[in-house]
Image (cartoon, rainbow, N blue to C red; front, side):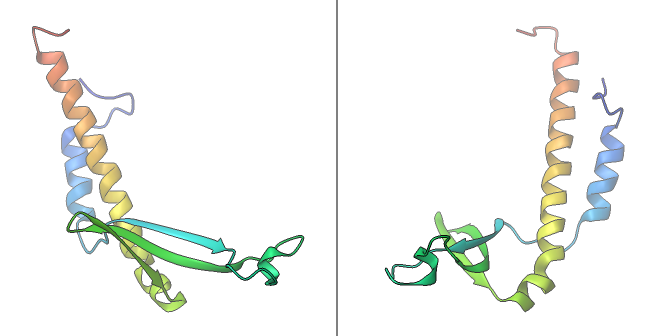
Length: 110
């Protein structure tokens, strides 16, 4: 059984193999902040927040670690974040298709 897209396990596996390469785990976010100084511009009306700042968040040893990236790091590492996102999407698609195949072949489906 194939998903609605008509892709096969072999096609997805081939894309995974082609996409394999350097990838950064975790999440990349870009956000702006208000600081704690009452008279700062970020508390004006309208507020002018500090930033934007790029932050890379991931788990290390079960703890969440966030690292602020410089604009140069963001430019250099963006392809690594993009590759990781692509790999995760392909793996999810492969797993979902595998479940569909197993469910279709199982004589004792719930």
